[in-house]
Length: 168
Length: 192
Image (tube, rainbow over all chains, first blue to last red; front, side):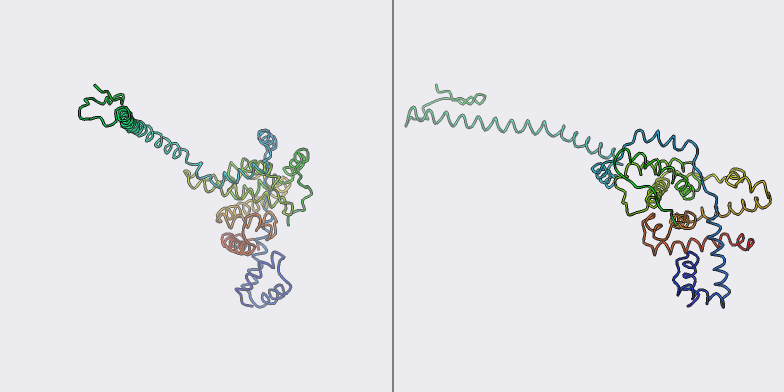
């Protein structure tokens, strides 16, 4: 094995995860390679130093504080967990409430300006249609009452406000 | 290697409370130590540890019984710390306070301090340098070397805890140790 391969095998060797073949290869290699032998010694020493680092301990208040925090916390049910995953997935949307509010405001303002004008226009169109329909209906009534009459002799006017036809 | 977990997780309310208390007792210091090493002894380390157990409590129903409890807790801790790092990157940077020598003497057993002050001072200096070297590692390398070499997890357990393939764990461990050996070369040669 080359030094490059042995260096990776040394890691498994130090961690106790090397195969028998790897162990034999490392043992054989370090017997004749001073650099890899040094690497093996340094690796062992480093792992020993790391393992010997002092442990950390939480403060005495840790459990009391945790219990206080848990008083307001319930285990999340399956459905709630589903909702939580959903919420996290779309968290970016929740991070922009201002954007949502601004969009809503813009839509509301647009509607407030445009809607009354549109409604007024619609009412005018409908009123005009009603007037024309009413005038035509009245004309048909007169035609039925006096068939063949000379309409040129009839003077009348159409009251646009009511749609009724007045015959004088 | 990680210890065999004696507690089993159940969903009934009474068992949940009892199990959770045992879980906190058994793992609070290990999780706290891991978070301290990942966050360079951040003053928030205990708060993050508390958050880990709150998250664990909330999601105990979702715990997969085929996974080790400690691996599961380490995974929650890793995700929380990474999340904090990401938020901190967006927030104004805070200069970490490096602990003064006297601040950490309490970590060395009293018997050592009393018996040989010179050896104690050397040991303390070595530990300080090791801690500095670990803190200088990128987070991805640091989490792997802390979990494997300091917390005693296997390659497979580390892979589960940090959420990456075993091959990546080995590679990160290799690179982390390489950097640590370089940084600690002086102390290693001095002590060998």
